[in-house]
Length: 99
Image (spheres, rainbow, N blue to C red):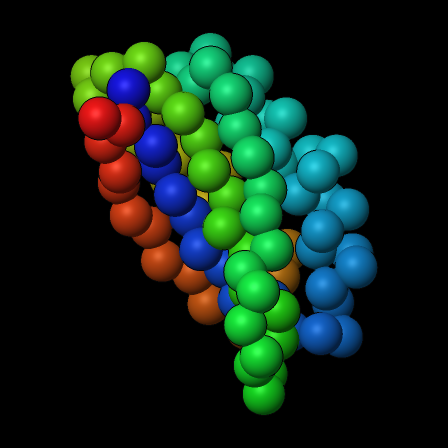
């Protein structure tokens, strides 16, 4: 199994709106693609001068499923996020293999 991890640092002034949108809209939209079997949203417990950091983890059954998600859906969903919270976040993605 593969974990697609998206780490996001979101500015404090839009944090509450972002978190609600992630839980109610974005994560359900990602899961509706059918390429992931579960998800978690975790707050990163570090002291930061700017923003609040979250790790959003989506579990895929295989690398093929993840690649298909990235090909078919990721660009659109990332664009929606970027448009809604323009200049209010930084994000990076990592892949983890469950062993």
